[in-house]
Image 1 (cartoon, rainbow, N blue to C red):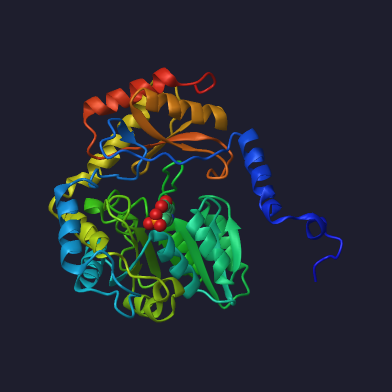
Image 2 (image 1 turned 120 degrees about the vertical axis):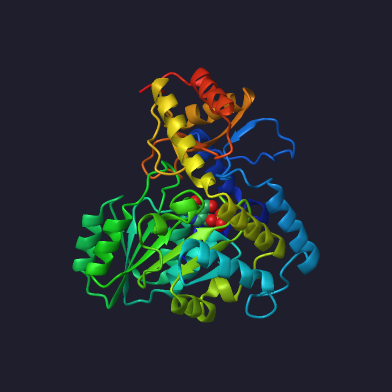
Length: 396
Ligand SMILES: Cc1ncc(COP(=O)(O)O)c(C=O)c1O
């Protein structure tokens, strides 16, 4: 029951109901954590190292052409839930080709990577499940853990021994180990072979969010499971987004056929969500076919990342050592990071800017996407601009 003397109940006018939002915004502003939207013009002249378009495919004619064709044939939207009217032949084709590309039995496409993660975490667990989740996991995995109604053990980042210990101590009937394949902020890879061994030794399933690995890791970009020799394993499931390397939008769960069947019949973000738009399904399919025909694209993205990191380090900055196509550069603080990113933009370079609460360790950073289509000249320009605009205190 509400407290009868709660001050809000006595004094609040309708206009005052949201006054606390202004106070919260003021607190964020004082901490240097204001976030604002900037609309991007179609012909933005800046060099883009801020997007997640890892392979530079978002404007590729094979991708945009497939999207346009799909929209013309199937319509602007999918018209309903996948179980009602939202499954077209295009969705089925995409699922079959995605599963074959990644070397798994089956795939199920969702409207986003976020909803794919919520589906996997809620449908593959129950109140008698222990979820062991890496401390640096993506927000969508954290939200999936929260929605799961399972006990969640937050394991120290990248620590398979701690994961094994948590699994060994469990009293729950089932267990699920969950990790990003490539961590979004620093671009370091999870220790998948050891995590898989730990999960297997304790009868647990392994769920890997391969949002930043698909198209970049593994042979031809087949993803982190393929890179770790885990694709097609009966106790392993991956989730992916179609919005990064594939230059589209949407997500998918990949794994054993019986997992996919279970998700179709029980996952709320599959059942109660409109199916992926045909244009997005078409674009992802176009990108997938391009990747199959041109498998060198994945290795080029990794090579660009290594080059960027080495050159930024040589310039005296603190750059992460990349396992995939993400490079981060440490900033002295949140305000400095925002100003640094703004100075880069003024100089013609778009970079990402990660600050608390998006960073697990409280350290603000610039985040660079090592796009596989960058030329050597563009890489040199990016390093020059980042070095020239670096704030005091950014040097290692
Ligand atoms: C690791 C990770 N998982 C999941 C998602 C969510 O994917 P989507 O944007 O397709 O919802 C993202 C980012 O977008 C991500 O970085």
